[in-house]
Amino acid sequence: MSRPFDPPAASRTVTRERIATRRWASVVGAWGLATTAVGTAIGVTIQILGTPDAAARLGIFGLLAGLGTGALALVIERAQSARRPELVDGHGISDRPLHGALLGVPIALALPASLWLVVIVSVAMNSAVPAVLFGLLALALAFAGLRVWAQHRLTRALEALAPPPNADALASLRTLAQSPLSPKQVRMTAQLSIAFTQLQQGQGLEALGWFEGIDDGEAAAWATTGRAMASLLLGQDPRDAEAHLAQAFESPYANAVRAQADAVRILVLWRREGSEPARTLAEALRSATATPLHLALLARLREQAGDLEGAQALTTESVEAFLASGLGRAIPELGPKAPLPKR
Image (cartoon, rainbow, N blue to C red; front, side, top):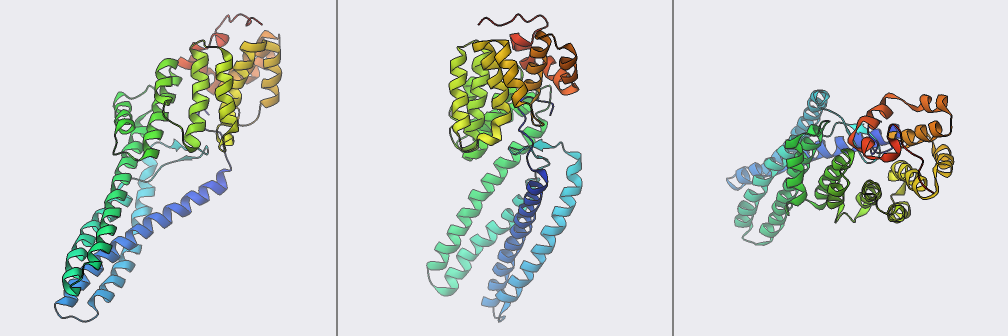
């Protein structure tokens, strides 16, 4: 991993299979339902004009056509997605999210069809019941469309958010984070992305502001871990960071942030009790999921203990990139001539 707060690696095979299964089900299912709605709307209209069973026949035809179209669209989109950068999700899986059009287009097809069914079926049956049912369906489709559009904008902004931070991408994320029309999950993701970008630049105060209000689910665990790191950057009492870490470790989503929280925990212990306890903890917690922050701290601790060869063994390309980052430069313990912390 090239960034200290990238999510840890997870069971990639199982998770990738689940992602692929959900992707196929959502895209093919959305297209199938959308074209069924379109076919049914056309069929009902023709049936009212005198053609028996047109609604059923065109509905079935629309379903089959939609399933095939959805599958083909997904295959084409996946082939073209190779041109887009990968994003790392909360499980540590690098993936290229779906383009919003794959779900946006079927919603755009189904919405007018549902509205037309509100009118034509209500008139044909002389009842308000179909209007209510199809009206609720149209409302749900409009709501889903807003979510898909917000998620699409979020994905595009995250793809553009590459070092050095893209100003336009950050502006898009700020808009999403502050918009009342953005779904809560999109708002929190946008906030986290901005906060961690500020953190990567070593701007603890700015990061703390964007962590505010994130208090739900896995995002809250990430936010409390980020707050711990930000408080250390601001030179606050290490016990404040320790309290934030306690919240992260007590969260049901502690495993998602454990690698990052462990790295911050090492720095907290270094400032509270000194280098030797911190080195012991860093060695004990070292694993394949150790972040660049963890490895950079351990390398410096080994160096201060006189283990120059062990320190050099940890100085990988990702660790060097971290040390050159704003966050790496903002941590005094990682400076070129960092003094031993006072006990």
